[in-house]
Image 1: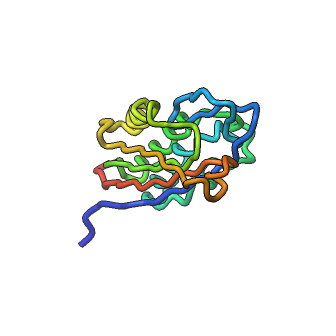
Image 2: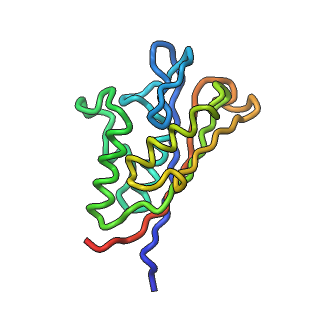
Length: 163
C-alpha cells in the first residue's frame, strides 16, 4: 500500500558568463562571472525545483516555467520556487526535505551555504535543517572543472497532505 511519500530528482546546468550576477540559493555571491539564463539562472534552486516538480508528477521546470515566457525574463528563482511550492501544494503534497549538490570549480561556496539553506527553507516552509546543500568540484575535469559552467543535482522528498 502506498505511504504517501514521493521522491524526485532534479538536475540543472548553466554556462558562466561575464556581465551577470552569480546567484545561488537566492544569495548573490561576489565573483567576476555569473550564470547565463532566462531567469537569474540560480542553478541550485532550479535543480531543487525540478526535484520537487518531479516528485509531484508535474514534469519539470521548463514545462512549468518556459524560457520563452517574457514575464519570466530575469525573474528571481526564489519567486519561481514559491510558485513551485504552490503547484505541489495544489497537487496535495508538502516538502519533507531536500538535498542538493552544487558542482563548481570556483568560487568557494562554503561561506554562503548557510544563507542558501535559510532562503530555500523559508520558501519551502520547512526548517533549515531539512534543507541540505553541498558544493563540490570536479578536480578540473568536465565543463564545470574548466570553469565553463556550473551544475547542480537535487533530490526531494514529498508527503501527501489532506486538502
